[in-house]
Structures are given as structure tokens and as C-alpha cells.
Image 1: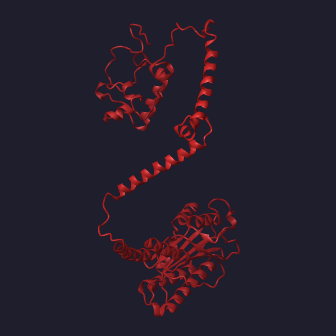
Image 2: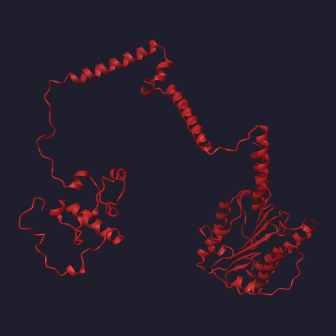
Image 3: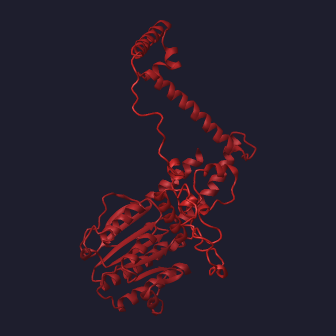
Length: 442
């Protein structure tokens, strides 16, 4: 229980330390209905704002989406006033990025900036080649490279020509500040705030304020939490074993014993629910049950049984009183049933996928015994479909057979022609459509 409490406390702390700030510089509405937001809520919000679901006119949507993710500190402060929310999940941007690119038919600019480099479309390539001369007072080389890449992108955005177009551009900036030294953390966080303000100002000016900015800040990264939970769990597990004197490890059949216990508990619960239902049932099924008999005394049960017996005797007498009357037959019992072919008589439907019966166990053959194999209606020599005088089918089923075989051949389940090319010029011995003797099924 101690381990579960620690995990719950760390999870609650993780959720409360996550912040999401949404800014919209063109004066439009940028407010969610709730104070706690999940990934699905944020995706629906972005889809509505950028017109991906046609919930808002295209003319009112922003021209660019700028997402800034800060992992390692929740003390990042940006001066612009925006709506803040608690974000309850790990931040993912792949869905909204793919939807924006798909909606703009690959005409939008998309950039991803982190310590590994600047990745994306044309603006990303220009930014990676843009030189900058700026002093960055950060000791960690990874964070310093992130800030340098942000300044490069800022300079490239200022010089890039953004034409008026229907596509929405996508920017994602990532800062990982968990490696800051404790005695220099305030100064280094200030450097991140400066770079953040620089890129926001450049993008807002380039797009004439038609920008939606979403800033995500998290005190502790998800990887660090997972790394810290494991040693805590191991230590408290050892304490629990010492407290309860558990010296052997978990057996491999513990899971099986657990499933058996769950099954037994489910059966007991079902029996209790059934007992209560039979007690509360007022119909004949409930009154004939053993539970109802045991819950009633003998006198009441005998009275109920006699009443049912008398009612049944009266009904039986009423039915047998007219036994001397002549029987009226609705149809002649000696008339022959109309002749039907095999498929009409058995009601089997043809399936174009059931081309041939493959090798399979006997139990599988019993399962598909009602299926008709199309290969038995096709000549293995010429690939020709047998006619009605061979198949014995009626006109309607013969027509369905031809359609099913043609569909199976188009789908690739059956060969189209199996006769060798050297025998194609051989004359026919007889015309099967005009046999010499009349056939009973022709």
C-alpha cells in the first residue's frame, strides 16, 4: 500500500506541476471551457480554431501555430496575458501537426527545434544556415544549443517571405532546462525566457499577429519520474517483505492462482445475485424455483401447486372435448414437393472467397462443411465453368455461380485459364450445350 500511495502522490504532483498557457494575438477567442485539459481536449480545440472540422470559418483562423514546450521547470514566466490551464497528460503534437499538413496539402511550413537541430521544411533549412551573433550565458551545452537554434529560427523568420495563403504553418520549440545548475538556475531560466520572447515576437510580427501560441511547462520530465519511482518501489518492497516476513520471491504460478480466485469469487457473486433475484421474482419461473420453495412453507407451496394443476386440467379437457369432429386439412399431404436444386434446397449462399478447400484439421472441416467450394464447378483441364446439365443447378443459382466465379477470378482467388496453350487449337469432340441424349437436369 505504501508503494501505491507514493505513486499516487507523485502522479498528483506531476499533474499539478504541469501548466498550459494559450495566447492569441489577433484578438480572437482562445479559451477552453474547462480548467483541466487532456490531449483530446487540446486536439479538439486546435481542430476547431484552425478550421480542420469546419466549425469556424477559414477567414477567422490564425495563420500559424507556435508550440513551446519547456521540460524541467514550471517557473517560466512570459509577460503576455493568456489563459492558463492544468494539463493532465504528456504533451504530444504529432496529431495536430499531421492534420495541419494534410489539410494544407503539404503547402504549410513546419519546423521542429530542439538540441539536435532544426528540422522541417524550407524555413527550417534556411534557419539552419543562418549565422547569429548572440551571447548565451548557459553552462549546459544541450540547453545552449537549443537556445542557439531558437535564435537562428528567429532571424530566419524575420527574413523569410510569408505569402498570403490558406495553409497554416506549424512551429514547435523545445527547451529542456532540467540540467541547470542549482546556484545558476535563476539566471539560466532568464536566458530561456529571453529566447522565448524573441521567437514569439518574430513570429507574431512575420504573420501580422495571426498567431496562436501554446506554452507548455513541466517541472519534472516523465523519464525522470519513471527513473525515480523504480528505486523507491524496490526499497519499500523490501521493507514490506521484512515486515510481513516474506522471504521467497513471487512464484511463476501466482498469476494462475489469482485468476482461479477471481473465477471462484465471480461464481459466488453470481450465485448470490441469482438467489436475490429468485426471491424478488414474481413470475412463474421464480415461483417454481427451489429458492422459492425453500423460502415458503409447505402449506403455501402445495396450495400454489394445486391451483396450477387444476388450471392445466381444465385447459386439457377443453382441448380434448372436440376430438370427435372431423379434421380439416389445409393442403393435400400426398402432393410432391416442388423440385429444387441443391443450393435452393439447402439454402447455402455462394462466396467468391471460398475458391478451394485447403488442407486443414478435421474439426475445421466440420465447421465449414456447409460452404460450397467454387473449384468443383470448374473444369481442371480447360478452366471452363460446367453448365447446368452437369452442375444440376437451376437458372437463378447457375447465374449466381457464374457471377461468384467471375468475382473470385477478378479478386485473384481462382485462376482464369488452366489449359495449356498447345491444346487451345484442338477441336471439340462434342458440344456439351447440345447433348445427343436429353438429360434430366438440362
